[in-house]
Amino acid sequence: MRRERVSDDIYVFTSDLYAQVTATAVVTTEGIVSVDTLPFPEETRAMVRFLKGLGRGPIRYLINTHWHGDHTNGNFLFGNVQAICHQLCAQTMLEMIKLKANQAQDSRSHGEEDLPIRVPDITFDEGEMCLHLGNKSLQLIPTPGHTPDSIVVYIREDKVLLAADTMMPIPYFVGGSYRDFLASLEKLLQLSIDTVIQGHGEVLLRGEVKEAIQSNIRYLNTIQQRVMEAIQSGQSVEEVLRRLDIESCGKSRISLNGMVQDLHYANLRALYQERTKSDDRPVVPERQLHKRI
Image 1: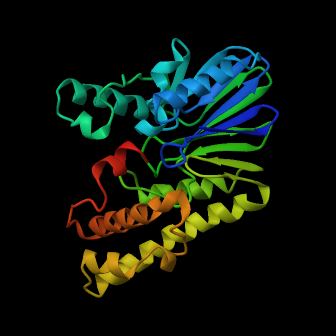
Image 2: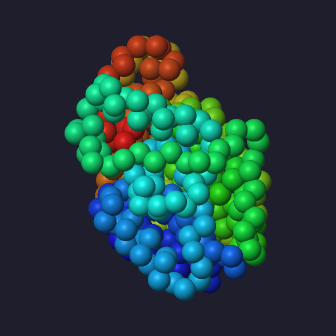
């Protein structure tokens, strides 16, 4: 796990074990707010240990930005800390508990068999939620697209956006919505942002923020146009995957140790399926589509 201090009051923790997943701690005059956890218990334990040793008050709240395990696996390690999420996030996590109880999900293949799922206690479902703690105001903003329950956390005083998977090196919407993702990215452009903490990857600073958001919008528009053109010309999904590599759509395959290439192909297949209602085979393993990204 890597730790980075992006301001006097904000720490970012990045997983060394999987896909550069990030979690963030916001330190206030009345305690600490953690936004998401890390994928593996040993990393989240190290994060919690560091925060408790800061001497800047207890951990008061944990916020989950969406239900995916790489951001929620460590919830149970926060003890009795109050946890917050969108109502759709809590509903999905409850469904996951039922699936595991009924052994309808192959938990072994997901690597989660020993990790209890802790569902947040506080939820919201209408509009935005604002958490005021000490000298900080954390604005919880729904940004569906990556998943239906996705939110971002905007810290007004610092102009810092904890974007979770609404901002990644490449937008990924399998299990979510291409159209919702576009609308959510447009919403981000309306905020005054100096720093973006992505759900995976590097922190974006002031000069990079607007272009990074616009780059993700361009990518979504590009693949939508290219896939529609391919369908209209009678191309199969296999031809689309072969012809539309990630560079031709304006992104680099280098990010996240090359994983973005798989995410790109999954996006293409999802768009093709949506437009043709055919070919429902996933392009990458189920565990990558839903468990870890």
